Amino acid sequence: MSAIILQDEIVHYEVLGRGRPVVFIHGWVGSWRYWIPNMQAASNNFRAYALDLWGFGDSAKVSDKYLLNGLTKLLDDFLNEMGIGKIAVVGHGLGAVVGLMFAEHYPQYVDRIMAIGLPLETSLINPRLREASPIELADWLLGDTPETQVARMEAPKADQEAIKQSLQNLESLHITQLVEKIDTPSLLVYGRNDPAISMINDNRLFSFPDHIHHIIFNQSGHFPMIDQPNKFNRLMNDFLSLSPGESPQQLQLKEEWKRRIR
Image 1 (cartoon, rainbow, N blue to C red):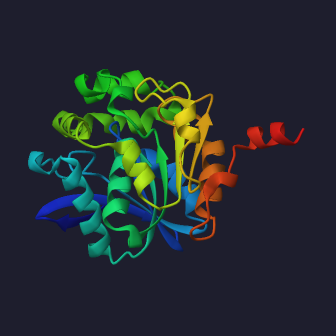
Image 2 (cartoon, helix red, strand yellow):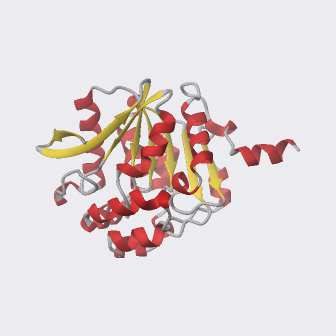
């Protein structure tokens, strides 16, 4: 296990591969560990980092650091301590929010963002995400399969207060405006069957600027990286391999691409 001291507290992280840096940031359920297959897929061409946010996994549980600004500062401190420059972000749920906030504050350090299950409006968040315990959330959002066991095992480590505070904090943040405000090329990814985070109206998704694109995994729930790992990893690597500043508008899932050329 790799760890560093930030703000006088332990932060757990792991790293794989070599190349341009990619930072994976987990969501409200689980920890860095459910990213392992995706980090392995990225590590052939990129240096993949993943860390546990305050209150999750093996990082410190410190309640006064659980607000979104505190989690964003953690990412900033982590990058500074590790000597990491410009990054790509792959964030899920809470991690997607933190990545976007970091890009707003430090646009020169974020090359691109893949945001999975991003709640574009707080009304799209199922209240159960705020109310249930971490174990109950894992039972609700993760099937009982060999592929989900790592995430299910890590979920009980989360401090429920970290989930609750960050979700409450979202009430004061206008995510849709934030997405439209930043100039960072962004790929929004959703599972069609996600019970926790609903998608915004399709017309709104298509109204975003050209540097923003969205992809829907029709057979996935809240964890498309676990539900459909091969498709997810292909899409992720295609996105990470785009030239700097290049729009992700060209990207599609393989099946969608086949239907378009018939």
